[in-house]
Structure formats: C-alpha cells, structure tokens
Amino acid sequence: MKRHFNAVITKENKLYVAHCIELDVVSQGKTLEEAEKNLKEAVELYLESFGTDELSKTNGEMIIYPFEVAVH
Image 1 (cartoon, rainbow, N blue to C red):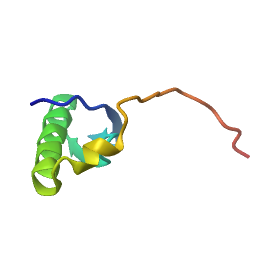
Image 2 (image 1 turned 180 degrees about the horizontal axis):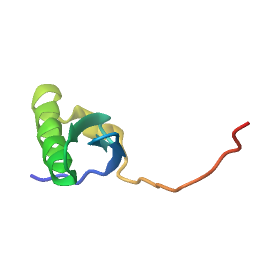
Image 3 (image 1 turned 90 degrees about the horizontal axis):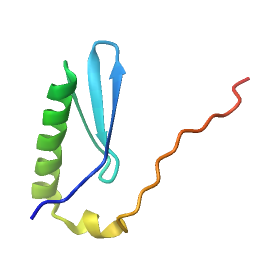
C-alpha cells in the first residue's frame, strides 16, 4: 500500500531541509534530490518504528497558503 504525503523543502545555508508536514518528520541533503530521497527514507523508518496509527489522526485534507504578518 502506498500513501501520499506533503513536503516543504527549504534551503538553509548549504543544505536543503525537507519536512513531511503530516508526520512532522524532517531530513536534509546537499541537493534537492538528496533531500527528497532522505525524507522518503526517514518517513519509511518512522512508519516502521511507530506504525500507521499516526496516519489516522489526519483527515486527508490539507490547505497550504502563504500569508504575511507585520514585523516591528
């Protein structure tokens, strides 16, 4: 069985940091491709360790939107 997840990848200094939003799992890599690959491995290990109980806590709907706030 396959599950779909969402990731946010940011560049921080010389590394790409990948964050799986649904599971709060984070990994990194020197390239975008390496960060993606490492995140997939991290998510697989997370699910092997903790099972899929965490998956039932999300209802499958996620809304991602940009917003801004005033900074003083």
